[in-house]
Image (cartoon, one colour):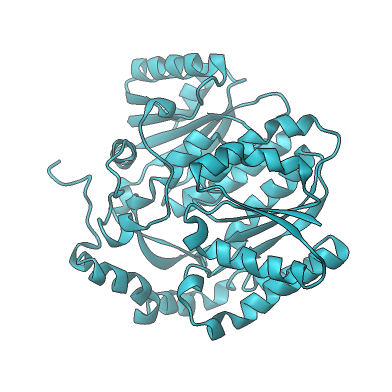
Length: 223
Length: 185
C-alpha cells in the first residue's frame, strides 16, 4: 500500500504529532506492507511541493496540532495548494489526527467538522479523524505514561489497514475526556491550578530566567 | 472605537476584497472611529514555529522580531477587530491564520476553567481584549456549510482569545450594513 503521511506540525520531527503519527503507522505496518512517503510540512521546501504526492497515494494520513482552534497557518497553506485536486473525480482515502494541549477533545470538534467537509470538497473517501487532547507533554513523558495512548493509536492503524476506516465508537473512547461535566467545574478549576499542572510551564520559565516576568504585558508598558 | 481590520486577502487573491475593506475603513472613520487597516500579506512574519518562547522565554512577545509584534499591539489596543478573509478551501486564508496563530503571546500559558472548559489565562486585563467580528468573501465552491463551520471554529477562537464573535457577515452585504453592525456594538 502506498501511504503518504503529512505531518502538519510546525515543530516537525521534534513534535508530539510526529510521535503520534508514527504509532498509527506502526499499526498499519503490522498488518500490511507499506510504501511510505513522509512529508513534514514545517519544512518550507517540502511544503511547496507536498501536494505533488497527494494524488498518488492509496491512503493519506494527515496530522496536526490544534493551533487557535484549527490547523496551524502553514498547514492551511498546504491545504490551499490542494485546490487544483478538487476538480478530480476521485482522490485518495484520507484519515486525520488532531491533537491538542487542552485536556478535552471537544475543543477539536469544530475543526474535525472542517476536515469532513474538506474530504468531500476533494471527492475523497473519509476514513475518520483521531482526536486527542492533553497531548502537549507526550514527547516528554516516560514511555509508560503514554502506553495507553500509544496502544490506542496503534489499534487505529491496524483498523485502517484492515477495514480502510476508523470506527467512530473506538474514536470516541480514545478521545476521552470529551468534556468535563459542568457539575465538576469547581473541582476542575482547582485541578488546573495545582502546582503540578503549572509546573510544566514554570520549569521552562525558570530554566530561561523568565519566571518572575511570566505575566509581562509588553504592549502596555510606557503607554 | 479603536478598530483594526485584519485583511487576510492573499497575494493574487480576490480583486474586489481590498477595495471593499478600504471603503469600510473610510466609512468607519466617517462614523467617528479610529481605524487601522492591515493588509497582512504585506507584513513580514513567518509562520508560528510552536517554540512557545512567547510563553516561557520572552513572556508576551514572539521571539522573532517580526511584524506579529505590530499586529499584537494593534489587537490588544483595539476595541474591535475584524477578521476579514476570502474563503479558501473552506476556511480563512493561510495568511490570516498565520497571524491568528501569532497573537497567542497575548495569552498566558496557564490553563483556567471557563464555561466548564480549559482555556488560557489572561495576560492583560480582561477589558483590554477586543470584541471580534468575521467578514468573509465567498469564492467559487463556497457554500452555507462552509460559512457555518468557519463561524463555529471562530466562536471557539473568540472564547480562547477572551473575546466574543459579535457577527459573521459576507461581502455580499453592502459596506454600510457591515459598518452599521460595528456601530451598533
